[in-house]
Every structure is written in structure tokens, then in C-alpha cells.
Image (cartoon, rainbow, N blue to C red; front, side, top):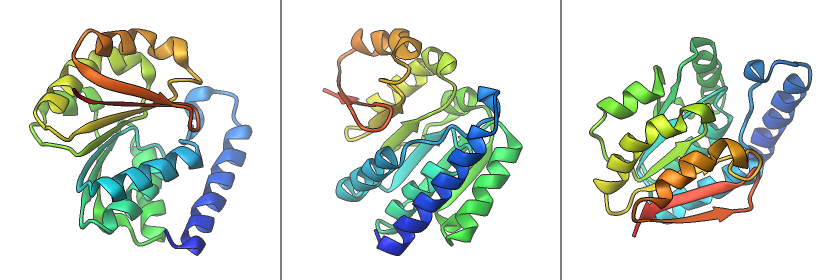
Length: 194
């Protein structure tokens, strides 16, 4: 990644972090992925030559910027979903600022409904939404992982919010999937077929 672009992304992160510090309600915060996690995802996309990405939990598009920059090297595309229109609009503004909007289809939609309806194959799925819904998503995430030999699921916050994802991870353990937790950012869980 161009060093100036990376610096601009990190400056934006600092701005969002400052905005979050002014809010007391967790649901009103941006709750962005940590820069080191975003950079890891960018590297993963580039080295895997991933072309089709699904992001569940767009927020203001901070993680989407990193994903979009990465797929721009692979002529890929991202579908990013958030249920809140204001967040989708903010993400579009941020993508447009860096001329990355053409790589992303932003949807204001229910992630669970999208997962239930989609038949697309994804090289990488980033799950960074409300953790209370993860167990409900698993059946469809499992189906998407099963239908593609090379698909990988990445779940954020598995160390920082371990108790919140415990039941979800137990569901993964019941099936034949490989998984690893990386101590990057708030903790990333990587899941793929055995």
C-alpha cells in the first residue's frame, strides 16, 4: 500500500476514535476494526488474490477502505452490508474520498437475510457485526464456506469479546473446519474448510 494512503487511512481512524470517545452509548460508536487487523486483511486479500469479498458490518467504512484498496490490485469487488442507512452513507463518503467506491457495493440490509438469500461464492467473508447475531448467521456462513474450496471466514473481536463469541465458536467446533485465532487487534478468528 502506498505510504501516503496508509497515513491518510490511519488519520481517519484517529478521527473516528476521537468521535467514539465522545459517545457513551456503545451502539452509537463507530466501533472500527483496529488498523493492524485491517492491514492484515489487506495483506491476506492481496496474497490470496481474493476477488470476491463479503463484509458484514460496514459501519463508517474504515475496514471497507482497506478491503477496497486491496481488491483494487486484484480487479475484485466487495459487497458490504450494514443495517443502518446513516452508516452506509458515511461509508460511501469515505470510499469516495479515496476514489475506492467503484470496488464496493454498499447495501443497507439485514445481514442475516442477505446470508440466507445469497448463493454467491466469496473468497473472503469478514464478520464484524453485532455479535449477538452470530449464532443465527452460522448455518448460512457454514453453507457458504462449504460451497467454495478456498473461502475463508474472518471474525473480529474474538479475544476482546471472548464471552460474546463463545457459543458461536462452539458451533464451528462441532463441524469439520480448520480455525485459528490470531492475536492481532482485538483478536481475529480465521475459519476455512479442512
